[in-house]
Length: 302
Image 1 (tube, rainbow, N blue to C red):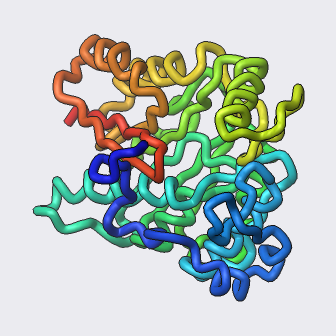
Image 2 (spheres, helix red, strand yellow):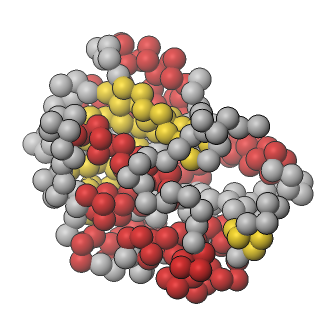
């Protein structure tokens, strides 16, 4: 049984506290209605292992809480859990506030680099809507950038605050997309977690089994995801190490470097790599949603 006192909680400024009000959400996306059901606890919910249901919920949440009416992603692309993504943005705001006497900086002067913006463009959307920040989103997939571009075109506030750049070299994170003369207050990233397509499939099968779902050899990922979104050589740990090593060259271009770290065991190696590049006091920011725990790793050369 989960200890309620130690149960991970959303950031205090996160708008998605408590149970979803599905009656209200349906008003912002009528497509959600067909996916609403009663769960085992007798509460109104959806099947979170149905990607179409998750997508319908996301459209409703973005319409209801952020007044965004035209969000969409192609079939098979990563459909992010919005409360968790919002948490990252709010904790980044707290990180930046440490440099401004605890006043959270707002407006276009705050520049954020989103490494791997994805087709969903979710971090820039939330950052613009909550704090008015300006974003540069990068990705190695032109198809993902095309969809993100379509979302941005749907609303003036997004068009005015979000720029997209294609990363031509998949092994590079900053080189080729950050120029020598520009500066970002912070970079954000949600690394691919798995080390291979097979590992991604195995992980999904394990989730299904843990949740008592019917076994299948071809699991459907509840949040979808293309190859580059879900896995890379070496998985999250190798991706994180590469980011740390590459960040040193851009020490004067980015104030704070940050990344989600899904697996706590990866922190030990990440700390060693940070020490190699001269970082002796990184920040680890715990996050939680329901029974899921995660964390943000942050470091600065300034």
